Length: 126
Image 1 (cartoon, helix red, strand yellow):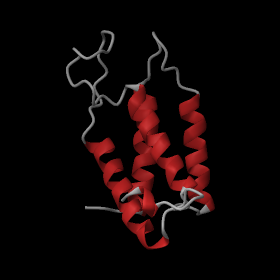
Image 2: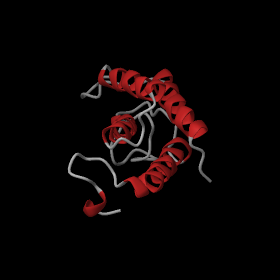
Image 3: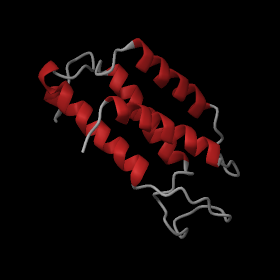
């Protein structure tokens, strides 16, 4: 998909919406299945085993949030229930502390996995 496939208002060319949604769902599947749920005791950094694919990192949450918001902004997802779920997750992520010394919890990761599962159940991919 290239810039020419995105209309001036940010919407995806209608014929490519399904392709775009499928690509996002594959990314969601990877975020759910390929990232580790290990919570290192020590401060997380490049030398941490499993870095950078740790779900406890802010990157994981922000990636999910941004991908979801893009689906709404590009009018791929317009269903009111789905949009409400995305808005709820957005508020949740905004409330997390990703600053120096901030820590996410297993419950936070569970919430992230749940939003991924919700959309993957609605738009299954291989």
